[in-house]
Image (cartoon, rainbow, N blue to C red):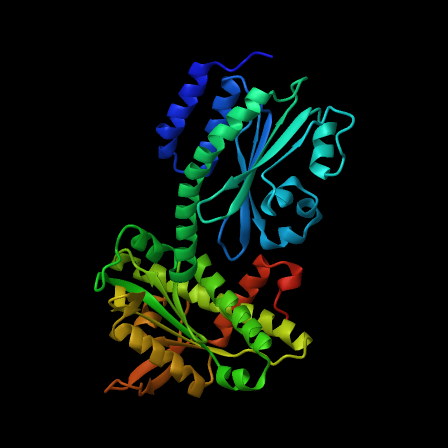
Length: 419
């Protein structure tokens, strides 16, 4: 077996200290590292990198490299920790404290104690080794390498892998930290607000005036539910309600800005005034999807002998200030302004008018190319000197939305209840 050339080792080290730091994704970095190691004579034919993350649905991302193929990235949910494929894997042992694990697959005396090793044996692999990759915060990640070379990996190959792994760990940790920061900001403040924060818009008072459709939703009877039902049931109800609203908003280009107890504030920004009708239509389509989606949620709740969830929604279109507001050491990226206040008052009015959706005249006018709104007359709103005319969505429009929803949904999700 040919020895590795010193100049190739130096070349790879220089690349890792220099150019490798400019790679924007772990996928690209890992693929190029594997390619370079093979080119210098390390007979790697399969490698798997697993990087843990902080994400509400994803526990870790796996990056699979195979000779002659591009890297495939696969997200693994938190339930993978209870799956046999993980419980009977080398990576579990590494996560729990082991530093490396080797199986000389071609050796008939090698223990056949892990499914992945048996799978690789059937595919013609001769040697397998997995290493722990340490992040500076104590997180334990893992990477494995497999080969089909007749003699497997040499001691020189493994020594060089051990040498470069700490530097590789630093490179992917930098990328993982940015990815985690992006995910956390997306999760807690929304994607566009998160992008602005990452770009440095973190000074108090930094904001901009924008034109947007404003959405304010609130669950009915939440206080009574909180006082009378078990905590787990209340949280489950809130999550079902917010899932229904947020998914519809995101599908139609809106941004959820914040949850306020059982309330939700969202916007559909307008690039300029020419998009007024488009943004209003998108928001109204999302609102109609919420209506049909909540019917489905309530069917499930009734089957579990739980009370139906009711809600109110206010829709308006106008200018608002979107930016950093708060104390010197505790900021909130939010929206404020008279238009936001008006939208919240419209939502309040929905309870006394016994309708789920209340729209301002400005919003109803902007959405008129999509459907004709039904006037509910003039009403006084808290904090406003003059009464205003408000509108809602008629039964015919709701039925159309229900039909559209059922056309897109699978049989198990279809709404059977009629308007």
